[in-house]
Length: 364
Image (cartoon, rainbow, N blue to C red):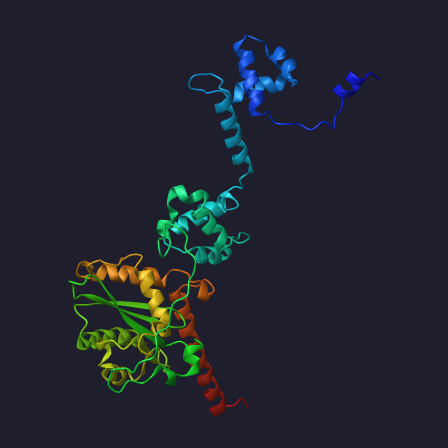
């Protein structure tokens, strides 16, 4: 078999993309009125390659072929083909986009998708990479809890030295039971104030249950201890009234050393609970309520005048927080978690009543 025929039928020859130099030569020969077959012979390419190149990479508006523009179009097409489809598949993609716009965090989305779409899954890191990568043009970072335009790295903070509390008869958080710290039992609340502008005296009191993350929001016209104690007592009394068991729903409260908490003894006596105080400048000791205030700031940003925030808006926001799944709750909502805890108490009370009934009336 002749050498040129063997070369023609060599199936192991690898395809090679056109280079910029070859595109320039194609353009030059085309301007000289060469046919596609003559151009192919001159640059040692198949005639189909020449035809496809002049058809795909021309400027459609002017129907002209420019070598530099053709090479640019080729690279864009190559990069697009090598990029993985965003967020795995259309079902996951639509789910993530919808939940992001509903103010869910990537962790909440990744945890809840297993319950809502059985068989589908996605990691929080994949969602973050999409938000700050290919999906950045849609400005999805606006729906994240902190709304950072650029992704930030976690850094440590300096710790201040301990100081004495100025609250009279304050009970230190060190005396709080270990089961409160480990969140093994429900009914232990943290409280703090969220402030608005410096000129406005109006604040929002935030109370959060440590285990279930059940949240209460109350508008106060100022930071005076008398007003806070009345409002907080009223709100927590309402929670206690919902319980149909003898087990108290509210057991303890933990707060900082702000002057608004000086009437803690009145709250303790009225609700029959224990009141604990963090060490000065140790805000992380009530990290649950600090985190919750950060979530509230997504809807009421810093610098907002709280005087114009209505009770209806606060109630809407409270419901939204309590009906959003949380990673720390295995992607249950705080409402679901609180209901589960109260059902545990009901079951225990029913079990004790049944055991007492069996003891009094044993079967013959």
